[in-house]
Image (cartoon, rainbow, N blue to C red; front, top):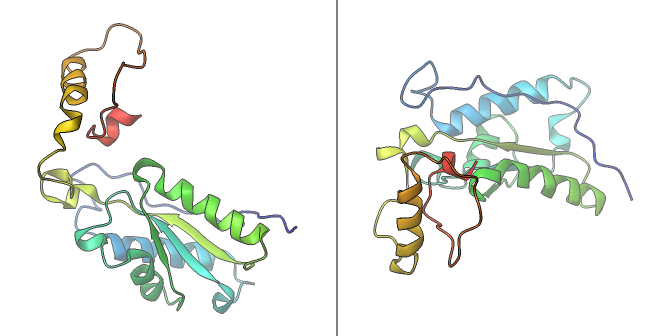
Length: 171
């Protein structure tokens, strides 16, 4: 079974929501820029050998819709299928896992595993706006009660979990 290794990495600077130098950058363009730069770090790699671009995106809608992985791959000059993975906060981590599994299973040798997020480009910072499922009302109320200041240690609440918390709260 072949080992999977990471041979190059890259990222953009961390931006501030609705501010900074990245605020006007579309997620597909941003991902393509980083993919190009990372592939360029490995000059002995023929980009035609890349099997797939796996791109995690916690909010794959709007400009990050339409299979942003495929769009970013094309913009980066890599003609592969592309797969967009939505696992919210761990989307890009999941792509690394998927690429490692594919290599170890013998499905290919070279994959791009990455992630992109530009949530501040959505109205109100989210693409998932709309009515929440009332089954989670009690859990949302628990979260709202804890928001002002948490002074006691966290313990798992009883009942159904709150699926509508913000990404910062999941940390």
